[in-house]
Length: 81
Length: 188
Image (tube, rainbow over all chains, first blue to last red; front, side, top):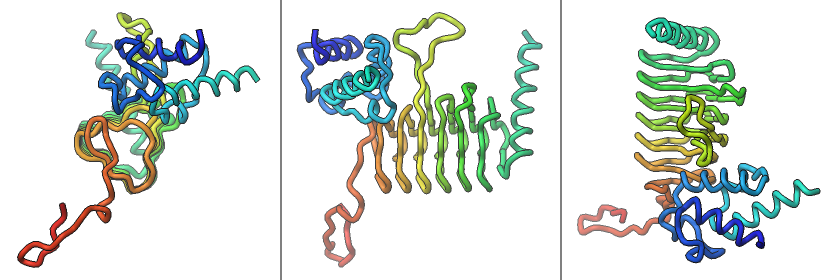
């Protein structure tokens, strides 16, 4: 399973929406369930499930699913280095 | 049980005393300060009646710069670390929180898992009554947050935010203006 799909499935699980309803541009602006508290929960679940520490600034700045995937990808690359 | 509560009241009273001795801060009645060890105040700060200030047990700094006002009933939960800039005013019953419950942590326990992110609020900000500043928020200097707004994210200096979720609204100078029949300028 690629990283995008993994992150999308976890975000969908937190927001309790169908994974198929989310794409890279999905975010708080167009997904009603994606509010500020759920964004924090998304960060927590991504860190736990993907065993990665997301930098505070990047994690809270990410506005869309695609940006979140990039944040996770960069964090994983840093930790692997 | 009574002794447990007496001890707790004594700890809070000592925290107030500790802060009043160390800093130039006005503490009105019913202010509650917990875990003051890593809390610092600039000069002439005011905590109005009923304000609740919770420091960080993990040792993260909670810093209120000069002339900060925490109005009546406002709350600062500083477990993740908080920085509030010079002259910033938290309105009545505003909440600054750095913590939230871990969505997958144990819930039915006396020690629930709590996650934290630091909050930074710049100088000269006005935080409206009942507004909520969520974990991880960064506000630049001179931001204005409307009453009841729920703020999440990072916003540059001079941003005005309203609503839930809070959105930036255009600066006043960018709004259209016209003249009424009496010749007075009218903002729309």
